[in-house]
Image (cartoon, rainbow, N blue to C red; front, side):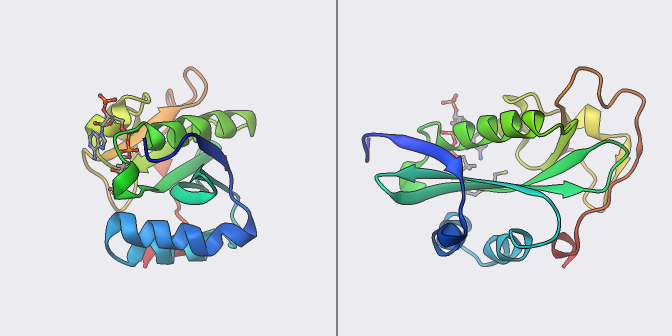
Amino acid sequence: MLCDRVTIRPSRPEDQAGILSVERKAFGRKQEARLVDQLIPAPQYTISLIAECDGRIIGHVLLTEIGAPVKALALAPLAVLAEFREMQVGSRLVRTAIETAKTDGYEAIFVLGDVLYYERFGFSGKLADPFSVRWQGRHFMALELRDGSLKGRHGKLEYPEPFLQ
Ligand SMILES: CC(C)(COP(=O)(O)OP(=O)(O)OC[C@H]1O[C@@H](n2cnc3c(N)ncnc32)[C@H](O)[C@@H]1OP(=O)(O)O)[C@@H](O)C(=O)NCCC(=O)NCCS
């Protein structure tokens, strides 16, 4: 272990620089940091959680409200610094985000990502199929936050502008 204890907590405005640095380093490019920088202060509701290790930000996840036939969020991006991977930090961020979204009354989360990774949290491509987005395909998945919340639902998902750039 590189630190004694990893804690997960909601981000605060003063965490922004640390979050952007984690996003840049984890993805090795600037796009995700740019997305986060635009979304956190945007008018849409967001859930922004960080993983902290001895006071240092080592991981981040962002969920943003989207327009959908149900009250829904998009999960993107999820990032953990390379030296802290394979230690369940990403999983803890995702699981805490799911619980927060449930508590906040959301019915579904949509994600575009690695199928093997997101299936472990209950995300499914089948659940996302009836919803139309620009990035349709097998990597596009959905999670019901309440049993049956997506049953019989279909339609277009509207993502905030920063996702479309
Ligand atoms: C993807 C990422 C967030 C995972 O973070 P992490 O903290 O290493 O993930 P965890 O330790 O919680 O991994 C949990 C499990 O998923 C597996 N896993 C990790 N990354 C994976 C991936 N990209 N695809 C499939 N499985 C993956 C792990 O091996 C582990 O398996 P186990 O529980 O059987 O041991 C991290 O690798 C990362 O930041 N990558 C670069 C940015 C990125 O691609 N983010 C988008 C994700 S769609």
